[in-house]
Image (cartoon, rainbow, N blue to C red; front, top):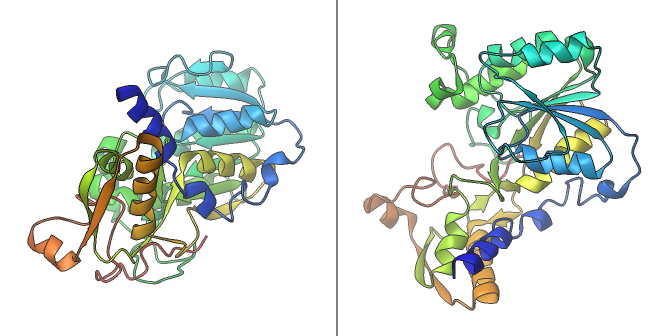
Length: 330
């Protein structure tokens, strides 16, 4: 049962996501276009968001170099050039690339929590790169109160004194969104007009260890009766990690600069769509029948069942400040 369940989750992890991304590079048919080979440096590349982008870059004929500690996914991409180092303590590998005269059309940075960590790498790579891609987050927005909010929406902030105390990704905590915004600003200041910022929402799919989306296919695979939160009509947004990877490479190939929300179209999917898709796949792949009982959000709240924390990927649109949840413009 374990291998079957794992196979099921591999397919269910992205259920409906690709279809929802009507505006993605895949949906626009851009992945089949002929491209000029490019040289791409990944700062990271073997964790969660990186591998699909690396695979897309390889598939599109680009030359890929990876810079990381060599600790996460050390056996991944054995045929690629690996440069070992540490974003906090050892950037000598990047320095050597530059002194050796290496040039990169683009650098993709997936480890973007603290401005100094990003700008330290950028300062070394500035003479050797044509574009810097920052993987940020939709958490940079101060609220979700406005349906259809675009990339210019009000941003989260943190005061200078507090920000100065945040030295690593482990220190970010409640200031995650605000610090990501500071990273975006610092990157643009270092390399004006040459920075592409991609702001993913909830990322789902292969190698996700958070359970923020996979809870639903896992629960559906267990059968019986499961809770559906609220009315089922609340909007949800997320992005398949494979589509995110495709979009990263698309932005490089098309030389897109500026900020972009990397998430499914606004108002395209509801919590009902999300839950029922998991139920359908459980039935089709495992022969498991699961019934969904939709439970009023007020009752859930009375029982101490919290949106997002206990019912992943769901926040009711009736919640104050979340009237625009699931409706960010893309």
